[in-house]
Length: 535
Image (cartoon, rainbow, N blue to C red; front, side, top):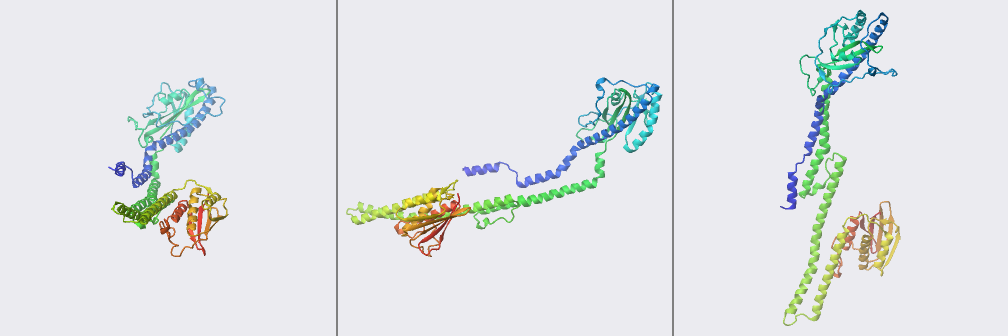
């Protein structure tokens, strides 16, 4: 199995999600997300319970303050107080505030069973406390009309002195009441249905079957004077949802509509351009020339850049492939002539040496050997040009050189010719001195081989490029040849050793470095315009 086949096999074996699957998962997650929120209703329930506790604390404290005033007004008549609050449990006398924060929690607090029934009191309530209960009862009635809370007013021993039911009975055995009779506030959660286990903590709304009970102690002179015992059911979250059902239906429809819109946008901006680019790649692989056209729809800026870069790269590779094929055909043709000549001359010389009498004169032998040496030199020159062409097409890597140094190197290579240079020779170009010298040397060599005596260089610059005009006074280029002078292996000096690769190498160097070369009209000799990238 080849490495390509092994790579393809591994590519098939490894599972990868498709883009459509990812889009579906994202859209499904967006759709299901509101439904997942149903499992977190208990968080909202918890907030409703704490809100209910806060309301009971506020109402109890108001009644406790009124209760305490009534008890203080009867201290002179000898009204009896309850248990004394331990010093460590008393509020700081220097503090102006002593807030009671609601702290009930469905998760951490124990959910108790239904509140126990009242029991007969061990002793009846003091007449003074019964009178206080009678005075508070109208206030309780008016408060219940608005708050819907249940109220029980207890004396220092836990006997009910005000309330719709249970007046005269004791609630001292209830846990939260027992705590309040010691001077400490306490609130608990109890189930509303008797003899049923508490609902699981992971149910949708644990607060549906819950009652909040709050026991607020009444403190007079650091002693317990009574308890304000209140209770209320928290707001029903599902009842709230039912009341707002139209809004929730509209919200659900809005979510679905938004999901569909997101899907369409995602498909138009991501999926559709992606599949079009995949199809374009397959067409390019099959060799279809019209596949290099821009995509009909890009979707996003990134896909536009990606498709442009991909199609440009594919087109460049296609052109390079065509160039290599054409170049190989030309190279084969160019190598065939000298090789055929060398082989023919060598065979004639061999036949002459193997014969009994030499069939070739010494002059003919010398001519054949000269032809072999000439063709070998031509092959060596062509090989050197091929190496230069390969180096010319190599990608540049932060190259930089000054024109003055390049011109000085050119003058040293052609000492028998006059080279005049002017313009901005101090500017740096984005090309190495070696490659710039290759460009100018080939232009100068062509000029010399066409009888030029003077070569003139004139440099000018702008922000991005540096231009150079190269003129010579040699033989002019005919109109028929002007369009072909940059083609590889095109030459008018084939009989004198020309390879036709000099100007092709010049163009390859300039193109690979982001520059250009073109032939300008001239009355005498030849004039070329070079555009170097600025360094």
